[in-house]
Image 1 (cartoon, rainbow, N blue to C red):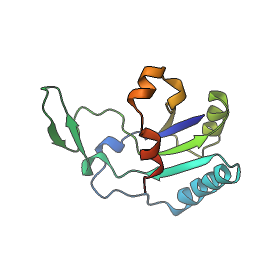
Image 2 (cartoon, rainbow, N blue to C red; image 1 turned 135 degrees about the vertical axis):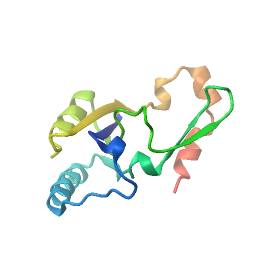
Image 3 (cartoon, rainbow, N blue to C red; image 1 turned 120 degrees about the horizontal axis):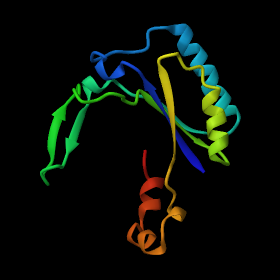
Amino acid sequence: MRYMMLMIPAGYEAAAPGTMPDDPKAVEVMMRYNEELQKAGILVAAEGLHPPSMGARVSFATGEPVVTDGPFAEAKEVVGGYWVIEVGSREEAIEWAKRCPAQPNETIEIRRIMEMDDFPDDVRAAAEGYADMQSKRS
């Protein structure tokens, strides 16, 4: 089972464009954690995200796409980065998240990634070709 661990740093919703980690010690500690995940053979991906002030949202409330540039006034929590891990259970994902050297202002949300086997046959048939798309990503 694949799980996404979403890092939610408090205050990141208001971070200025170009805000980057500025504490080398904290980065070193986080890199050691990432290496633990890698050595355990469960790390699929790990990425940090630029702040919402550099992003955009596309909404469809009117039936047409409407683009809003960041920052987003209504945002209370935003994702600052993520890991994708492959583990045997939700409990194992939680145990790995608990080992993260997160700061007091950070929260990790854990969400299972949907797999084709989770869907009924008719939905899998409608999504035919999805696995090929996934294997061709760069």
